[in-house]
Length: 387
Image 1 (cartoon, rainbow, N blue to C red):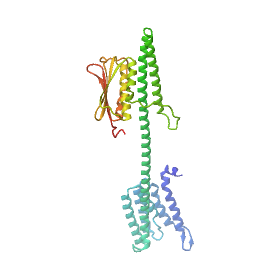
Image 2 (image 1 turned 135 degrees about the vertical axis):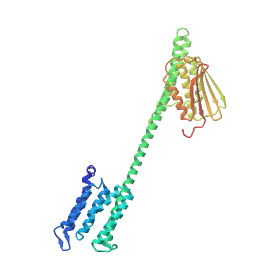
Image 3 (image 1 turned 90 degrees about the vertical axis):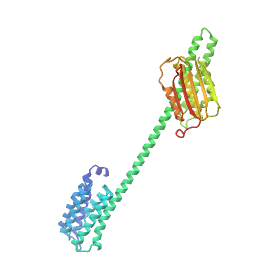
């Protein structure tokens, strides 16, 4: 019923008018000696004052003026049969619920004074007697009730708005976390797959070349291919294990790679045919696990790109432990603009994302003397924005 009335404004606004007319008929039919025929004059004035109430929601202030004018006129012309100006009270209530507090109270006090003054003048009573003040109290009460209803509606609307905003914020935060986790896992998968598949591809080419001329050496290369394949599967199992839920069955997971595994990484690259040297300067110290992993992945991706895209024979990995940051530099001696295959750029993007996530930076580009350089500055302590 409430939803139906919400779609039919005029019917909803007219309901109080119909109730007031029925009450007026019964009120004018009641007398000291019992029931009698309704007095037409009193009921007519009430009905006439109720007509503007049909539009009380659309034009609340004009409706107050019209109903008050009719009620006051009825009180002045027919003081014996005029009842309480109920239509004006309904109009004042509606105005208080739909307008500003200032407008509602100015109109309510003005209407109260007018009703009290006209009633006292037509009934020849003082303004401060109980009957006159009762009319004044009725009008003030209608305004106060409407003001309270308006305040409550506004408070409920604010509560609902805050609840909706909080719900949207939670949903946006959940989506953001899901996106960040998806990007992180995609980055891990890219680094693992790209590196190991590149090494396997390079070692397979070497084995194919040596199969007829040096079978023993080819057998050693095939063994390296087997080791790299197993390492790739282990790292893939570890990364995919991040997708498991807390209540899933536990799975064997390899430790997170760090700079302690750098020699193993470089050894695998050397077995793929690329000569790599590692230079460490400064005072080596334990780093945060996230910094260790980021440095390892940057070196891994840089050497993978050298294998895939540069016609280089040598590469150098330099780790410089400074006062507040670790600088990782990977260079190769490939000729300018040399490229063995097209790249997507995801590797460089991933390196920058990893460094930015812990407050570091990455720069990459060709060297003037030839080859390519990747340089990263990684802080020893995570910044406050990345914790």
